[in-house]
Image 1: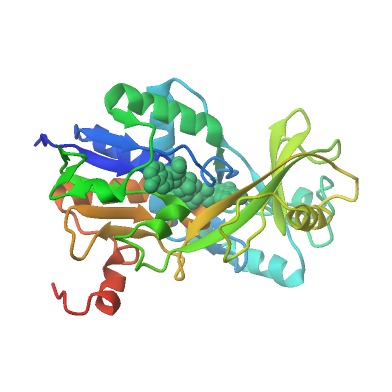
Image 2 (image 1 turned 135 degrees about the horizontal axis):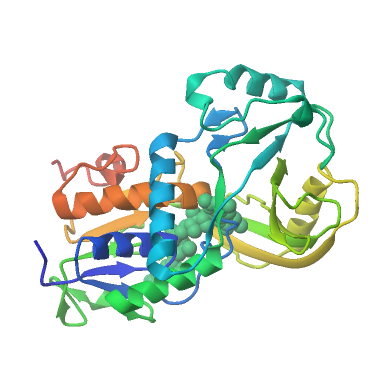
Length: 354
Ligand SMILES: Cc1cc2nc3c(=O)[nH]c(=O)nc-3n(C[C@H](O)[C@H](O)[C@H](O)COP(=O)(O)OP(=O)(O)OC[C@H]3O[C@@H](n4cnc5c(N)ncnc54)[C@H](O)[C@@H]3O)c2cc1C
């Protein structure tokens, strides 16, 4: 049933836009606030990698995430008449014998069939990067052109909802109204700035700074994304996005010499040639200690919700989690327990038993 009062969504990064789109799909009225200070969704490379290379594992809930990724981004491309979702082959250049062994153990397993191409002699002898231990190709990987996606989806939402380009003021919430206008609920999607939110600052949200470079090179392959210690994503015209760094407790958004040097050091594991640095960016990921999202209802203020903590793989998990979150809001579907902020309630609100 259609509500009369709108859901207020605070933040128009990846999190807020996905939640707003899902609400609009359910014919819910939406008011979207954004202060225009985006330092994560826009800076991100938008890579969608179904594998976690450290242990050569499948990423969390990967089959469900990949299904939602394809349906969400393809659907948004149709609705916005823009192109921002692209398949890409990620080629992992093995760093040592152990890593190669791990890949070889996993690739015959049926659950890896959708995500690993069986290695061939050509992969062993691949010449497009420094190659001492062979390489493996990831299947079902893709990337989102983040700026195009964010602009296009925001423009789409402007047509369907009330978008206000201004900061949200927590002091203006009063008994189910914001600035005197009644609302159904408020969903805070403020990314790393969620720590400033007086209602949800009890949550252990972390700020993880990352830097990326755009480089130019004539020797790096343009038809796939080579990866070892860092990713190199082709952008056309021999330009590549490269990253990223991980500074686990920093909300500083400035680019640094140290960040640039750290990325170039990693690039040197893939090519011996000198590369030209064209651009550098920095952003802050909203991460969590258990590497899961943070979403759900405030334990005391029942009209207030959070959808945050998308972490290092936001573009992979946002389509699935936004769908489940909005099902929870509208149809009372249970939230996945691993992302539900209920897991922090007992520690912070012990008297508030449910
Ligand atoms: C360097 C780097 C590389 C990355 N690479 C990848 C990658 O390759 N693949 C991947 O999947 N993920 C990647 N990520 C992670 C991804 O960017 C995040 O998971 C995701 O963007 C988080 O989105 P968000 O909407 O929660 O936060 P944000 O993008 O920070 O959006 C929050 C929005 O809320 C607004 N806002 C905040 N407070 C208020 C307020 N009080 N009032 C009004 N508006 C407010 C801000 O202006 C902003 O627009 C990367 C991140 C970084 C930093």
